Length: 107
Image 1: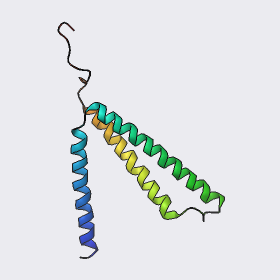
Image 2 (image 1 turned 90 degrees about the horizontal axis):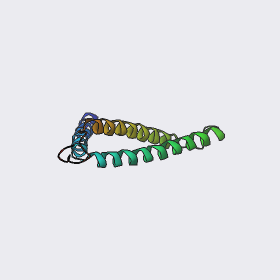
Image 3 (image 1 turned 60 degrees about the vertical axis):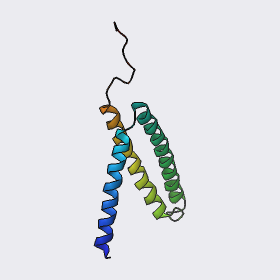
Image 4 (image 1 turned 45 degrees about the vertical axis):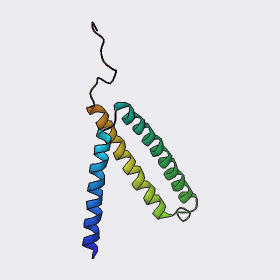
């Protein structure tokens, strides 16, 4: 299988994974989405700190200390986490505002 075949498989996998992920987010309650969002925010923060640390190491050592592949991988992960956070925010906004529980008669 040539490069085109592997690109197709990668794209197919990505699309399938994305559909599954969207379905799993749609099945979450508002509370679960908020929890997931907060976890992703923590992860994003850690990745940004690690990225900044590696950049500082690279500058101190004249650009040779930090592994460029590692820095690129961290940047891709940060981008992915940002996109995931945006998706969770959108999911949260789409949920009905009635998550407070059933109203009592007379309210």
